[in-house]
Length: 477
Image 1 (cartoon, rainbow, N blue to C red):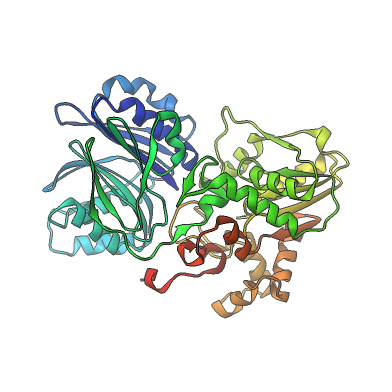
Image 2: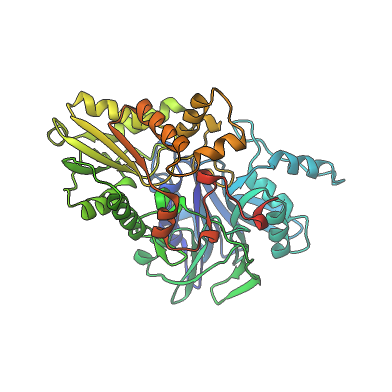
């Protein structure tokens, strides 16, 4: 994933920018960056590796170098950002969040378009920086808003961005609104964020949420719409299920409230006998509290999360590193485990690797029974639109592996479709296959319609591709 924050103010913006970016740290663990336009009109930038350190600790020593009233920044799980781009449109800084599926095709198109000075820099892993490609697409048009619109139309995937030009910020939400872009206001300043969590402690009040594909120009004095929103929205449902911060709201719907409601709905559909409800930290906790409230069973912490030094474990691409982080950050509480029948709520089951290790540890500590309730449906399709999971293959997904085994390797669309129908014999056999692989006493997934009911937005406005492979016709390329 990743997240960005920007400020346009009448006074110095650096403190607000610094802390606003930091409030997006849960969205990425690889790179952090910020850029500010100095009083002399020069863009000052810094980028740091935050793989093994917090954003704040890496940028504390840089803050004295940043002076200015307008700036942008980003937490990224992938590429170095912000980039500073010299172009015929001016020198600007840019940050992006999203995923470009046709990156190689667009690069080839740029090389063969007749422009002799086109070039791209490789990142350390040999791949091209997608933010650099976005800037190249923007520079093909005569002005910034037209360039942003052109880039979004060319990209297969998603792209939300902030662009800093002088003391102006251009903010654009993904063409189909897959990620949120939200503006806050306080006296003498506007801020733009992906997480409303960043606003309260910086004294910003929510002012405006961009619609899908909308582009605005932000200065310290005003917000000017440069492109009206489109008609098709596909905001990612996983914001509410997993990676959105509990105090954030998107489309007016609070994350924590959805998780409580979703947990209550799961409990209403269950008649299991057990001793206590537990949540897999962090995002499984709210689902578990909702489940506990509705079931009348106590909520207990069989695992506590060691937060001072261990980051989220879904970002590192190396499975061995992911597993180490997952193990080290969760510390068991033996007195709440031994000889207990425990029901756990988790936001989702992706690969199942970490969960399988967790269940093994529970048995080592003497648990009597382990029951799992996933707050979302089985993940069957890899996400095409955001980098919340960087699985290399759909067969990394536990549910997809189960289908592969049950069908002896046959996984065409018609075959998979049978397993997507909640309650069908094929669906039940898939769930049972995952249950056995994870060594659980019971396993249930939330029904998609009930999850959408907890979110409360119209079905056609929410992206559910990873669960059911559905896309509205207007969003297909």
